View 1 (cartoon, each protein chain N blue to C red):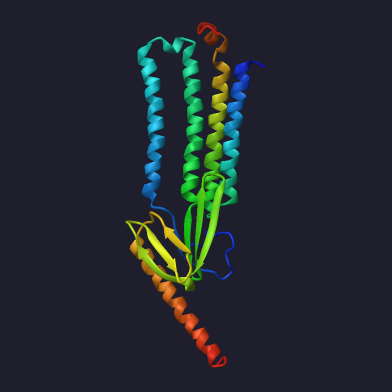
View 2 (tube, chains in turn blue, purple; view 1 turned 180 degrees about the vertical axis):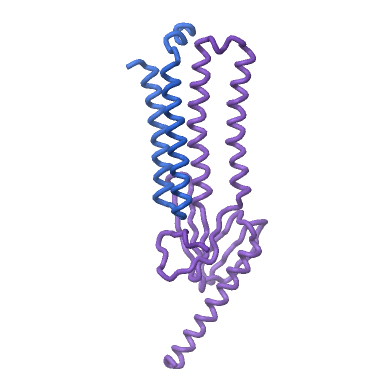
Length: 72
Length: 179
């Protein structure tokens, strides 16, 4: 596995860990069920869209060229 | 009015009189940070686009988009962390007690309560802050940056007075031998 992929995987895992903590607080400590449900759907839908698009962008970046250009 | 609201340890017949959070303006001030970050991302994009007109054809264009997308991901999380901090911090005034729910980050959550009968005084500190003091004890509550503090203070004082009168009536009944 290339180093950049490992680095990206760590970033995604950090993002997912924060996301899991947000969802836990949103649903477990909810004060208003309706608000918590709506916010959960907004958060998870937005999060999935952003993460998917970010993954596709990661795939289309030509990492080999970038690193060889910069002298790595 | 507050049917949708429920909190841990709520009694069956307990009626919520007031449900308070910090003023929305406080949340708006935090949102400005998010807006600044978004503006910065847009500016970075335009800076690189104008700096190099052929950027779209270069290999760095996708890298720029990837970086911006990654930053957006974390800004998205940051917004919801700020919203949770605002949303989960609350004060609930019921016909029996005052409940203070304090959320600090992800790991500190403190719930404390104060019986209305124990309240000695409610004073308005600065704009938007109310200090609720109990009799004889060191315990106190501070409602921070709440909207309409004058109204909240008058409601607390009124409820406390009502509770005091009903407690005196109960005590009188006991003294008279339950008559």
